[in-house]
Amino acid sequence: MRKSYRWASLVAALSVAGAAQAGPAFLYLGPVGTYSDQVAQQVAAARDWTPTLASSITDVSNQVTAGTAPYGLIPIENSSGGYVAETAGILAKTPAWRVIGVADLPIDNTLLVNPGTQASDITTLISHPQPFLQSAGYLKTNFPNAKRVEVKSTAAAAEMVAKDGGKTMAAIAAPAAAGVYKLQVLAGRIQDDKSNITRFLIVQNGELGPDVRASAAIISYLPREGDGGLGLTLLTQNLRALGFNITGAASAPSGKLGQQRLTLFLSGKGGTVADLQQAAGRTIGQATLIGAY
Image (cartoon, rainbow, N blue to C red; front, side, top):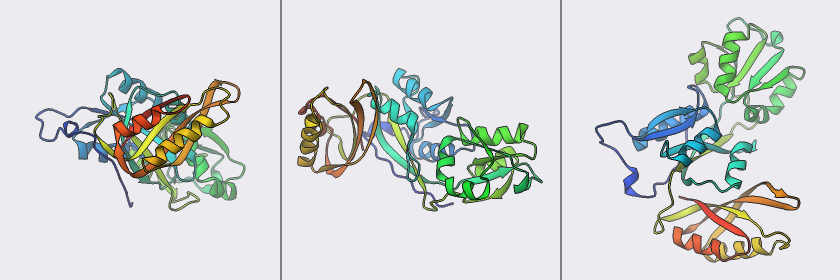
């Protein structure tokens, strides 16, 4: 399967290649056989980090925040399914960790069943919420009456089918899960958008170096109550003066009606972390740089 990865280093100290012992822990939501697992193995190999399983996206965030693991991998966006709700909620609360890069993975949703299962036998579909969104058209056409069960990962769906599915359940999962759980591929590439891609954030415990240059950034912004959008306008102007434009935004409740926390995704010609932090500070409300790469 075609793969495309992109990440950016902040400082040379992140490289631990050649170390006699295993590299630092790199947490990600597994288990083995998920899309996250595919990306984590690639990033860890390039960085000489040790891929380490976590129980959830929030668990990755909490452990990196606490310093239990210095690095983590967190899914943020799918090109057809949109932002990952759990991650967007974490970002909106201005996490203590910082984003130092991204990794992109083309998605190939695969329908997996126990050997001998026919499409006409399937009454229940199991997967993570994102594959249901990504394959909505295919499922509507082929399994309009099937019950849908959401679980925490695509591999968990495959495991459930392997253990308890008999010949009435199917999992939507990564192709690698077929071999891990000894399932049969009933249909491949069932995503509606054949160019479907998921982006993952590479995060670290600790602040960003002020002199690091970046061509992409992430800012968490909480507008001042009742400012009528003035703060966001000022922030946008400051960022554009640096050559950065907002390419995406995710919102989450702030706890007050009419006031949303925003996560702003930026791209530009390049600037330092210090420049971006200064631009974020010259606005109304609370703006924090939480990623630069």
